[in-house]
Length: 388
Image (cartoon, rainbow, N blue to C red; front, side):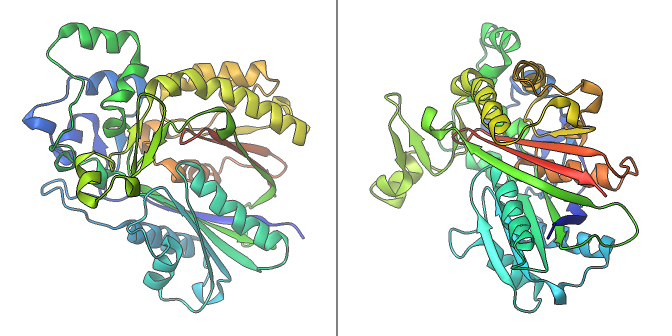
């Protein structure tokens, strides 16, 4: 029994925030404007994004749970799907609103719909695709008639200046040579300000059914492959832990006390920039080799390629790696809305998919390849869809 994507809904909170407005919303660290922001933004290519924050007060306008619910409601409005018929709710996110209980049961409670099977998946960018894979396999196996899969991110709440005032030391010193080094090698900027100028908020909901619905096109899910390279690398992007120079990785519960964890800056979202620059393309190449062993595919098989990448800076090396490993897809077949929608992490690939699916550009028979890399500990996800 095949499984189909029969609709996608998204929610992007509040009005778009342009590059010149970011610090007005997130706030200035130390009461001064960042000197690295312009360099990072020039490198990543993002021109606008959305924050679930009140631009005047900086207070949250939505919780992660509420972002997710809004995407589900948008999906139902678009497809006519009734939540009274929902069998499975599968939710992925990087940072839920609470440690316990899980994100899916909070979303179900907010929706208020009849009993369903709730599932949550953890991770960073891959959490959305793993949630989707559970939904897909549940329908494919006949366990569920339908499933709604979600991916959501509320990064901005952790990027506000107040979260960095007590010990955060930005690398944007008054030394002009520091700025010049950033221009020469933008990856270095990741160590300080990259995440403040990169991450944004948004959510997506996908309806998976055992047969196509409605008059518009649907997408048959051919397969989903998720490939971890964690055996070859240390953690690279993390929160709730610290990574020492000797390579040891210490979680917040090992800090001795909640106060020690706070003072030790365990709860910042961190990115090991040098490790990212060294490994993201190398391990991508190895994951493509694994994929091609499992699935006999080449770049010629695809009409559309939906890549989730965090920064335009990485696009060229990614293109070269795909081409060198026999999965090269011409640039004109790449579809991304990173510049206008921002980096919404686990939701990004589904926010792309929503725009493509609802934009009238797809015709039956076309094949799509979706790709999600995660730098948490280097995991790579691939999904093949066929338009029907």
